[in-house]
Image 1 (tube, rainbow, N blue to C red):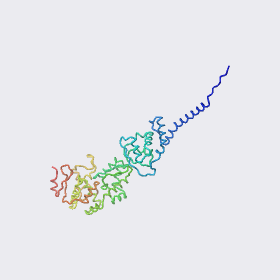
Image 2: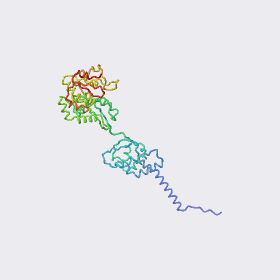
Image 3: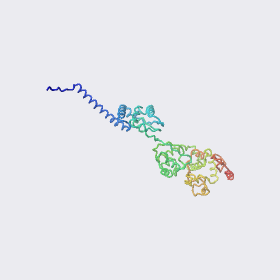
Image 4: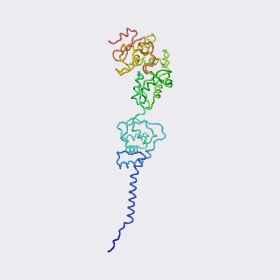
Length: 380
């Protein structure tokens, strides 16, 4: 029998097959290595991405590596305020970040957010961002809109306990009881910062709106209050107190009473005048707010300022009760604002000794020279 000839592939076919195998191996290597390299440089991809998407975004991120990993200005120490509005798109945020010099490439910023899954977690709010951060660092910052600063408000006429209560919702990590302990028994350096030698800080916690870092501690908070108080305590005010025979402590005590009595700030000089007239005549101040301060917190009314006062309340035994004790109480009963301090420094020139709230609910007062006139001003 004739033997069949064995067929062999042409050399070119063999080479072609080898080349195809090499290319296939290269493609496989690329498919496996590109996501691994991207994950090493940019962190893990979002689990929501499919296999093809992971490869696609990984390759694009590697091409934009320099824009993503290098900050716009590595040596900058100046932060910029940046605001994301509710519902703003990732594209809009990225473009504005590039325009303001916070990222190198808006498109690369968007790619990274989608790759990492952070695109759905951008929080509307205000941020302080630094051009010294690279895109990855900046993207992480945009996931938390908790402001670095908070606004803390002290209303005129608040007592220390009311200020302490507001700390609980302020964003500061200062406990109310620790605050009160420091106010009523301040360390020597804090007393020096306020310019007083001894006693409580009640009365010296200047009312107003304070912008504070969330990291502000108790000592820092008190020092901020001291700076604000001293900034308003001008030489002119001090001179006014001295002209009326009051030292700083006494002036703040009287201002704290005027603050609680004056529902309308414009009446403060007249109310201060009536109190000065009583002191000069050796009369008791007979001020309701001093009794309210002595009574403390009213559980039934859930307030520190019991209203109305009963006859029994007016007999409360306390050094702060000016119905029972002549002269000024031993300390301030509230934290007065600038209008009350100015009224004590520059009171009206009046003959009045008495004042009573008008019956129209306006918060204004009727003033009287004699007790008989004062009684006539009572509401029907």
